[in-house]
Image (cartoon, rainbow, N blue to C red):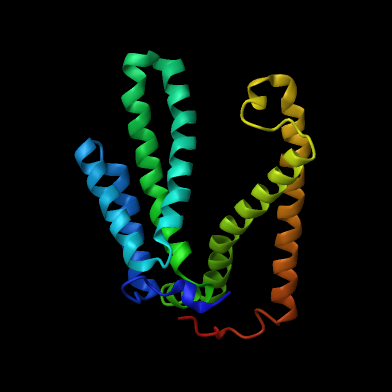
Amino acid sequence: MSHSRFKGRFLRVPAGPKLLTGLTLSMCAFGARTPYLLAGLTAANMLMGFVVCVRPVTLFRRGIKLFFFQSAMILMLYILRFGIEKGVWPGLQTSWQLFLAFFPGMIFMESTSQPQIVQALSRIMSPRTAFVLSVCMKFIPLMVREVRSIYETQVFRGANMLPRNLLRPWNWPDFINCLLVPAIVRTMSMAGEIALAAKARDFGVKKQRTCWPGE
């Protein structure tokens, strides 16, 4: 993958300030409990995305899909528990807060290469811990893409896993057998491949390790 993907749209922001800004926005999301504060944090996240991401529109599109999916699930649970009148706004507020807590991380991962993440984390923790944490951070979006690929393949093969199909409990075995189990197997396989690659490169032999410079 070209390093040009990780260059900011307007500014080339180092990984450290991006990480600090993202953590600050995420923490603020838990204290924002009014529409005005939530709207302000949303605008701040959008500004950060436009500044540091090469393709912010693509990122925002994924974020909107995630927000609507998450909101539908949370609103359903709140309405079932508290009713429509008392459940809509609290459910929407909770979903909005959760989304704003995780979205800065999505922006950071989209705009930062793994070497940059390792270099930034190595300033505040050991190189071994920084490497493991950076791999975990990059592993999540990779796993999401793998699960999406498995899902699309199984649906094309005829598995009853579309959202409308999952409303019927008798289709849940397809979800478990065709998506959940393969996803777990693939996750374990990918983790083994990463561990094998690190071992093949003698990871851990030297206390201080180097990183390929990422821009």
